[in-house]
Amino acid sequence: MINKRLLVKNLLAHNDENSFYDKKRFISIGEKEGKAKFLKHVCALANSNPKNNSFIVIGVEDSDNEIVGVDFFDDSKIQNLVNAYLDNPPIISYENIPFPHLPEGKVVGLVTIRSNGKVCALRKNIWKYYGGAVFFREGSISLPKAFDIELQDINSEAVATIEQHARNNIELTLDAVINFINTRHADLTSDYKVFKEQFVVCWAGNKKVVNNKTYYSRVDIELINEQVKLFYSALDEITITYGEDSFNTVEFVQLGLGSEQKYYPLEKMVITFSENGSYSINSELIFEPPEYDKKTLHHVLNSNNSLLQKLEKQVTLNKSELEDLTHLPATYLICYLNGFDEAREQMERARPLLKSEDKNVYRSLKESLRILRKVRYN
Image (cartoon, rainbow, N blue to C red; front, side, top):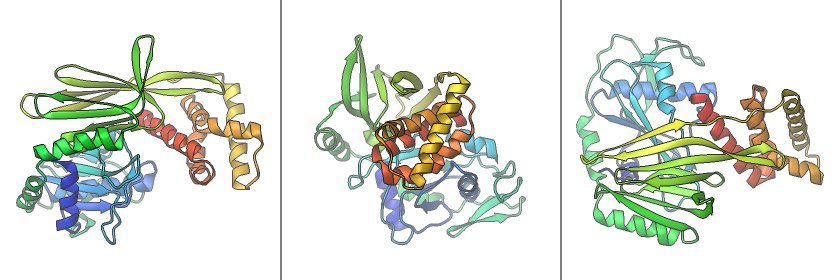
């Protein structure tokens, strides 16, 4: 079983960017340019490694390999994005890898790419890249190539060696469990469960019981063996259930206008563990967004836009406006889910303003954008 944190360390320590490995300070697949560049690198790495895994490490400074981290990214539908834009798409996964020195909520992103053995190409135009384009890696650069170029396997031995050096052991697993419960989450309710005598799942959060049902907030869930963070949220609540073979969560999001707030189920995740040392993660979006009167939402949208204009002009907000500001991310999200497409652009416009204005509202905005991204990709 591969310890993904050791894998990241081995990639950074022993290899500069090459034909099976790339590193990024961040990716931005919420916009066309960022999405196009990400797809280009996925295509190039898949074509350059038809017989073994390729990797993109995200959250690393390019100049000195400093691990600075990125926000937790739980987009389980990233395979859908690749399938939509690439012919012969590779199998792709995005995992969140915690590092002890990073602040809470920050992780290193690890994208693992596995070719299907056929030439991968862009299916349709995106940004400045044309449908039908094929990319390969030359050193650390992804470049377009002729479509009929032959795929060559040149990295299997190197990748196998790196993965072998990242194998887990009992000491690493026990240390990670103790650190998770006693150090990182000493102020929260923590627990763990061992599946199939080899997989250890740890979780922590603020626990509360409502109508005989247990909910957790400030939730952190990790698959300890592989050092993979499965779930993290500073705001939303989840339920956790498990049996002998599976670990299940249902995530709830709080939405509403003003004081009329309700919890809505967003996504169900099921991790199934097998006797052969493998596991699978399946997620299902179960979100039914609340519907509101269009005239009411039009008023809310205009009010939010007015608040953003005042922030841009550095106008001091009164008490009522400050209260409205706390609800701005969630109300923009409701507007978008009810057909006001402009709301998404306004949420992106609000990012730099809220980051400097109010950290709690900025955190709420990131959560709202995460929900929006899940709904759009689904």
